[in-house]
Length: 121
Length: 111
Image 1: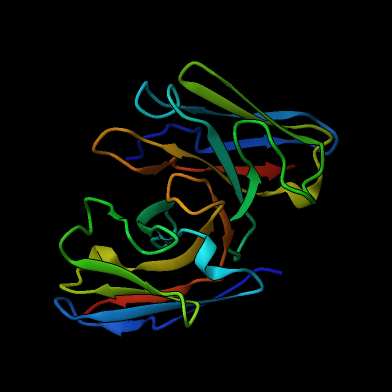
Image 2: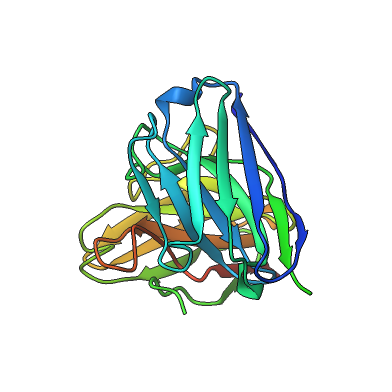
């Protein structure tokens, strides 16, 4: 059974940084592209960033480009999202998700339970 | 505002059939397949339908999907109380909106 466990969320001041992690188990982590999708309180889903299976290709939503950096360590089955220059509108539940195959162009498949990021002074 | 347009709400009584629409453009639905996600209250989204009309294992055949041109639909027949949830369509987008775009979500209420 695919399991994705997110961590690293919390309260941070505007302009601050936070690093989210997602650890996968129950599947061959290195065979699948991964993404982060966020959901602001009471709002819909927004894709944030994705990375291919070997980490060679990363994509970002315009809203986070230049501020967020996505990486993965396949030896540790871990996906990481470094978030800098955080703003109030980055406040959201952040979900880690697998894609159906090695490229971000495959549909999002399994999802973690999420980690909450709150940006506030 | 979302790139894909969904009605904010839908409703039906147990046993009824309801449909949820998702409207896009040539750069997204018009060129790529559509996926649907179900989000039960207080939980993470779950894949409900992929490649327009394919159900993952475990999803009842009461759920069906279709796509035509730049629009897609999710149909739920034999509505049950446990179907009450938020439903989101999603697809790849070739324009600057992308690459992945979601609809704004439809809250389904079972009356």
